[in-house]
Image 1 (tube, rainbow, N blue to C red):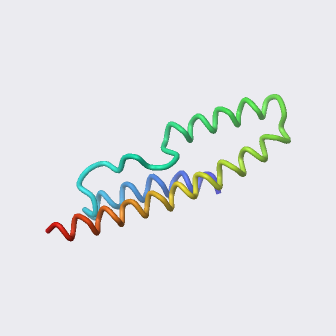
Image 2 (image 1 turned 135 degrees about the vertical axis):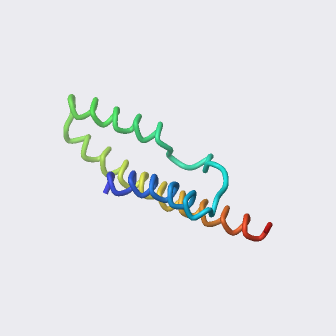
Length: 87
């Protein structure tokens, strides 16, 4: 689920750009790439010391990343609607 959410976030951003729904970069998204990398780093550190807690962190990251993917799609659609109204 974590990998799906991470890929879906990237795909939604790229697809919106290719379909010309947006003309500029999507910024201000929830849980962007840097936060995902920090989450993975924390997961690796916790995995080394307390593997049982790593499961909880991985589950939390999977939920948050998938929420981020849905949020990215929502922003792309909303910006696409706004740009179409301006034309």
